Length: 319
Image 1 (cartoon, rainbow, N blue to C red):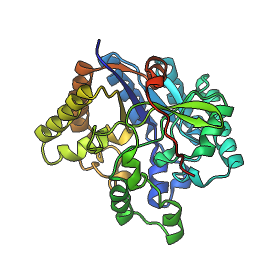
Image 2: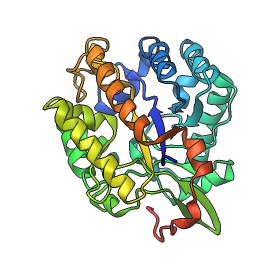
Image 3: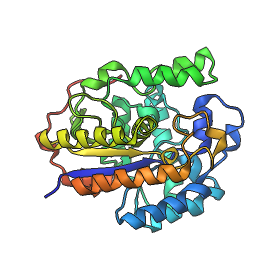
Image 4: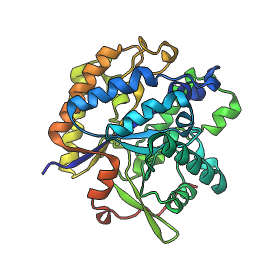
């Protein structure tokens, strides 16, 4: 049998990118859902598998977005929670604020889709012990917020170079994408132990041993230099994952499919100089490669099928 690989998409909307970048106008919540969701669902139907969509609560409360969120649910994809406000510093929230953030998003998502989420991913890969306790108290079975790579500080510096953020805003985002020590965390699923209870953690996959990113945004970055290099890099990561018996959790974003030709307001974002048609072509090659090597499942399916007991729980938590 082929090993498991879960596929997920953080449904970050246009406004959330503008907000984190410090651009004006995000408060009106501009959206590209009409340009992205119907087309992307057709692409997924073409390849014949289901993925997990991590949805932001703020998008779910807006009537203009609900038709597209319902379309995701009716197409049979998993619905998961990506917070309400999409603040990539929720590790700074109090436990009460975290509980409100999770419940507010959950209620909005349930109203829009009819589905209660059982999985969560923090924006900007933000997480903490209090978050896990809140998730357990609200009936969640897995978290997917960790990103075990050594390159988090480099990615953060690169992002800050173009962002229009005040010193105070940068201070709040000082842990965006995680610190160097994140690279020492496991890339296989494991349990977090929280006050005598366990919650399952499914990390975003990175290159086994090397801990370099392998999510689609990074692969598109490599493709700008050489698509042959990109495919060699991906196939090498897959080969090493099989040798080390590493299960994969492959991450997507809308900007991995949409180009600057469709969303010119996000031309500042890395990879947006590639056209939408070109990105779709690259996505097809990558997803077929993954499908040839793994059994592709949702995050919830991955959570239910993998053997978490074989992974030793990590003893330390981010405060």
